[in-house]
Image 1 (cartoon, rainbow, N blue to C red):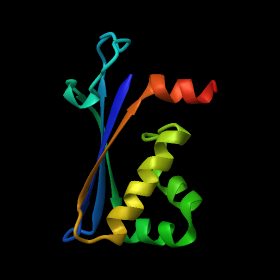
Image 2 (cartoon, rainbow, N blue to C red):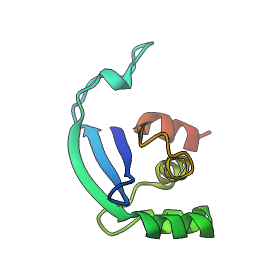
Image 3 (cartoon, one colour):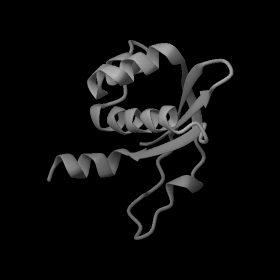
Image 4 (tube, rainbow, N blue to C red):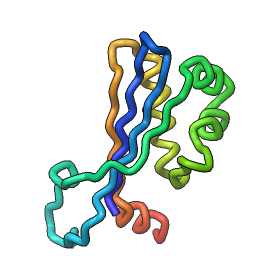
Length: 115
């Protein structure tokens, strides 16, 4: 499954928003060149965080941030949430950017785990 996470920071409202999307169809990805950004993603879920709570978690370290991002409703696998966490840290460090997009292909994640 292809997954996309849109991560945005609303500085005025002091909120972090993560929207989760997925490609649910069964298109073949075995061809030589595959462009995941051209696929049609369906909205799955949205989570909102208080900016101050995320800043506090960032100051405690990556594990604290990952713990804060995960919940009963939003629990990406470890390899995904680590990248999401890195992007969140970047957004909070650099005030000029307010949006980041992360795309995961489960096939590539599984291939790395089997190496």
